[in-house]
Length: 266
Image (cartoon, rainbow, N blue to C red):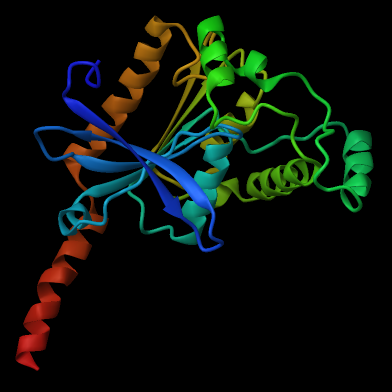
C-alpha cells in the first residue's frame, strides 16, 4: 500500500469547534508530489475517520470531492445541499438515508426522548457485528478509543431518523456527479434507497454499483480482495473526472484572474 511504502504521509490533528470541543481529524497526503484533487471524508456513525484540508492557496486550484460512508453519506448530501456548486463530485459508500424501525417502536422512543434524551436504550443488534465481515476488523474497531461502542442515545437516534426521512424526500435534488456503492448483503443501511437515489437524482452524471456478497463496511470491513475491487472503482471514477476537469473550477480561476484586472482598470 502507498502508506506502507512511504509514498503517502499520514497526519493527525485536533481542531476546536465553535463550542470549544476538540475534534479529532486526520489526513493522508502524497509525500513527493502535489495531490490531483481534494477528497473530504465524512465518516459513519460512531466511527472516527476524518480528513481536513490545509487552506493553502494552491488548494483552491484543485477539484473538490466528498466521500461519505454510512451516516457520512447523509452528511455528504446535507453539505451538498447547503452549497451545491462548491463540490465537483461525490462518492457514497453504503449511505444512510432511511433508518426507520417499526412505527410502534418509533412512537414509544420519541415519547421517551422528551424526558430522557441521553439514555442509551435504543434496541438493536451490535452494529459492529452487522457492518464488518472480517473478525479482525471488528476487533480493531472495538479496540479503537475514538469509536463509540455503546447503544445510541435516544436523542441521537431521533435526530438520525429525522435527518434520514428528510433526505429521502429530497433525493431528486441531488445535482452533483456521484458514484453510489452498496453491498448486496448490507444489513445496516438500505440498498434499495441507494438505487432510488440513482433513479431520481437530477444529476446527469451518476453511477450505481451493487456488490454481490459484500456487507456494509465496503471500505475496510471486507476481505482484502473485495476492498481492492471497491477502491479500484472509486479511484477510476475520481481519476476520469479529475482528468477531464470541469466548468466550476474553470469559472473560479477565471474570476480570480479577472478581479485583479478589474481593480487595475478602476
